Length: 243
Length: 257
Image 1 (cartoon, chains in turn orange, green):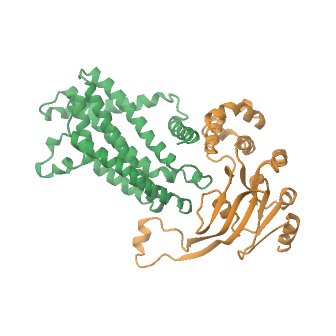
Image 2 (image 1 turned 120 degrees about the vertical axis):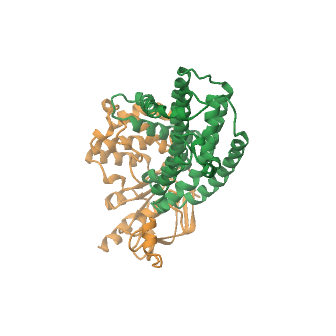
Image 3 (image 1 turned 60 degrees about the horizontal axis):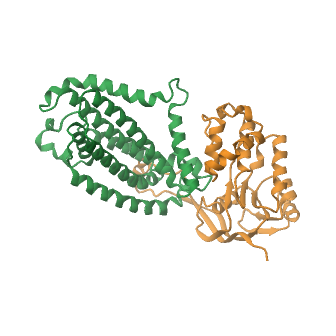
């Protein structure tokens, strides 16, 4: 029997969205002392369960507002579910965005250390990898330049080179491929090809072609909070028919 | 704390430190130059007041003034930066899970670094002005500063969370800190305050900390020892309680930014 990497059990998440914007200041509370803030209940996820097996490439598709990002944030332990629980076996690293913590005023090298430690690498490991990171990003001669002078493509290349150095068993990827030029996307796909089967991947994307191509199974979250899990080609086809 | 937590802490502190002097020609020299020139200005402006204090020489008054100022600055920065710490890192907190406490401690570490720089300059100034610095006095000052640091760390566990829910705290804290400044007798001697209002200073912990540092620095005397030790015990307790509060409330914080 295969091991379970991520086990999601009956999770529900509800957000209370203030109808007239968040009342975070005293003025707003004082001006309307008797007026209770009106909240609109928003069910992001409702009683969702699934398991991701070790080494599986598991994709999540669905329309905007179906709860994809919320799901990734719950699995990444950024949000806490209202009900149910999530079990993760192994080291999980979320890439909800490439280059988290990048500071535009710092040099590329300084940013590698900053972003790398945020992603869980130690300084010692980064000392070891730093040359490879710059070689892979093809940015060696720009190592001491502030990244505010980088093009967005250069920033993404640098961020990606750091990201692939992170030691993890489980990767959470959110629309990472939406950025970068064709050349860079090719590199990303090559990387996907390489880690398929070695790492567990939870992937969210609107790029249905890449979902079909790489996934082992697909979770389709629907607007009415029901869901289906199944074969990638079948799921993508069914989903495509809804629009 | 594991290896990565420690490295992350170092990176955060380094980044805050670097960002303060980025783009300036003198760069890190400002770390020393700015407080030095600030002290010079204050000394020139306020040295004329020294005659109103009976048992203090002009040189001692300079040190009296500066030591009060650096302790208040330490308090001001520690409280303000601690309060804003979580809010300032919101973009990071919604993207990745790491030990959130590191954000708070690195913000407070910055105030500690500033204190040490200022304290170093004040020691140099004091020696230059011919004041005898006693080792015991310096040791006592370190104890006072350590106590304040622990206390502010405990406070930051609460305020950093509250700040996310109630943004007015930024303005409220600024006013309270300004009030504390005048209630701490930084620029004027306690003797100048009318008797009936003197309790404000006598029961104000910041004023007591400042007084302890001043006496230790200028006369090498240890005053308010009982108060400082009591404050240390309370601060340690506050850290324990605050940490529990923080751990419980930080879990849902990402939803409130």
